[in-house]
Structure formats: C-alpha cells, structure tokens
Amino acid sequence: MELWAYEEHNNTRLEFKVKQTLFVGRSKYQRIAVLDTVSCGKLLLLDGMIMLTEKFEFVYHDMLVHPPLFVHPSPKRVLIIGGGDGGAIREVVKHEEVEQVELVEIDPMVIDVCKKYIPTTACQFDHPKLKIHIKDGFEFIKHTPEGTYDVILIDSTDPIPGGPAVGLYSSEFYTDLFNALKEDGIVTAQIASPYFDEIVLRDYYLMVSEIFPIAEIYLAFTPDYPTGMWAFSFASKRYHPIDEYDPDRYLNSGIETGYYNEEIHRAAFALPTFARKILGKEG
Image (cartoon, rainbow, N blue to C red; front, side, top):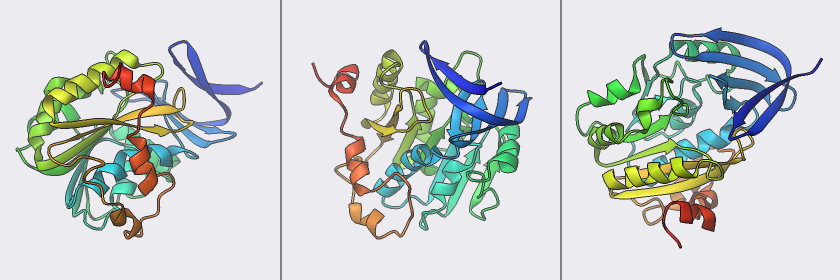
C-alpha cells in the first residue's frame, strides 16, 4: 500500500510519496510530523502544512536570508522569528559581519525534532553567535527596545486560525518590528502563493507599505510549496533592495548558496504582470 503526504491549498494538492514515517507528535502549539519521502528526503509538516523538504529547502532559506543581508551594509545583529528548523540560522551565520543572531521560537519541540531528524537544516544550533529565546515572537518584539536589530527575518508558519503565527501578520506586529529595527533596518518575511492567495498578498503588501517607507515583494520558485511560486516581502527603513544593492558584496563574499546569486537577487524583484496588478502597481 502506497503512502502519500499532501498539503491541500485552495482545492489543490501538493503530494509526496512517503517511504517511512519518522515522527508524529503534538506539542502545546501544533501537530509536528517528519516523513522520509521517496524523491525529496525528509519532509517537515506543521499542522499539516509543508515547511520544507531536504532536497529543496535551500531555495526558501537562501531567499529569506541573503537578500536583506547583502543589501544592508553592516548587518551586525540579526533576529529570526520562527525558524525552529534551523535553516535560516545556517544561512545567517555564513555572513562574517554578523556578530549576533537571535532566534525566537515559540515551540521548543520543533527545534528538538529537527535536531534529531533533519540535521541538514538544524546544523548550527550550537554556533557561538546564536542566542535562542523560547518565546512568543509577537510578545517578544513588543517588549524589544527601540533600535535593537539591523535585520529581522520572519520565518513563521502560515496564519491559520488558532495557530501560533496569527499575530505575526498584523499591523500591530509590523509597527513593533519597525520600532525594534535600527534607523536603517530591514525586515523580510515569507508570505504566500501569488497564484492562489491574491487577497492575502494584496492586504499584506498594503499594510506593510503604510508602515515602512520602502516595501517590495519578491519571488522564489520551489517545489516545496503549492504552485511552486512563493512571495516574500522586503520592508526597509532606508535601503532599496535594487538601488542600494552591490553585487560585488556577494561575488566577493565566498558564501556558498544553492539558489541565490547576484542575478537572482535583481530578477526576484521583477514581478509578472498579474502579480503587479494584485499589488496595484499596474492596470
């Protein structure tokens, strides 16, 4: 009997053939599962939503982390909200100029499970620059002193009703993010599929645009998520992701990436016509 794991999104399924179930459990906050798939290695699901596969997680983590860290001229202090799988940490600590990275994860079971079953991403939890806070990201940022961080990365689950990430998509939260950033700070976040989540993407972009003077949407393409196209946001107090981007910083960095490069950086912000229309930028 064949076993398939799937995520259903707007009446469309993304499925992976499963070799073995490695872990299934429930924390205080969510259902957690790790499956070994035939084609993509380990698969992490939270509340039935696909978070990553071993084979393709590099796309998401490259594009969440490297665009802001190669735009900001001196990203010394970085905060990750969510990201208990460890992939964002792995990419952040590749940047030598980062002096401290902090992770705020509400669910310690996610960290523990990923350390045991997905060491591909959970490989830098013992890094000397890392400090971990087991707290609610919404509450953590509300009590963060103004001007603390250079870059903040929102690596959360989707805002399903009753889930742990609902508050991380609100104007109150983004106002607190704005205040927690230094005067030239940047925040990036994963959002949704432009194909299926037009209203979510539009409302999110309008909300962020009212808070930050620079707000842009960019794209990456990964088989891990429904429709294969995924939108991220880049919100900045000072630096534009294209106008202030110096490709030589990446080319001279020596940092190894699987998806990100200087040409992908520029291309990611070039949106197709239908996406521009969703954001009210055309037509």
